[in-house]
Length: 268
View 1 (cartoon, rainbow, N blue to C red):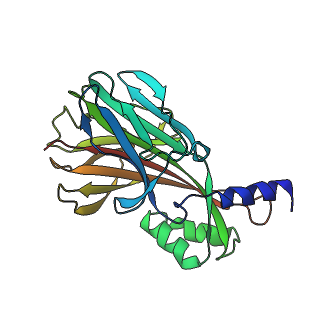
View 2 (cartoon, rainbow, N blue to C red):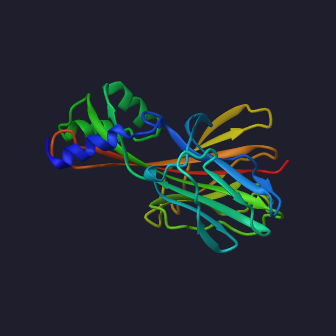
């Protein structure tokens, strides 16, 4: 086995429970906290705004930051910590939690699983593209990475989100804790710092009783969408990039997905 193939196999062996799963997000234990209180948040992976908790594992992420009142600091912890984020809330203002995973890989053992995925995420042309590239229809590999953000209000929560330099990200263009959202929550989806036009955005809404509803939306020419929100609910916004990868040898990934997510709540 070549060194490159050996390293790739080693990476596969270290994959966490997120393999084969869908959304990855940051879920605060409380979206609003007082200055000086402990601010905690879980890393989660799963479906329909429900899933398993991931530990603080530095080998699995490239970036884990907290940006509050214009100042950015690294989130530190011990390997295995749950919750992955546990810090003393700083002074009054809006905090943005930022998390970027490393690259992982998964293998599609059946063609139908790939078809289900690309149809759900509205990449229907990928089916024809896959076949046009002469790729196998089973046992092919995809690499993926996750780019998550979460908005937490400290005290009044005054402040604003903005681009934080992730490869792909969802930017909140209103503050859910201070602004009037009767006309919806405006967001912008970016890829490499540029707007993603005509991109599908999936919105997961969780009621105070825990019931989750899902709706699909699309960005306009400037990558913007206005999402319907209700007081007392928490939200997960998800947008995925799918792009082809040219393998150098058998077993290398042939597709890449980059997942952006944003979580927040709307006060009741």
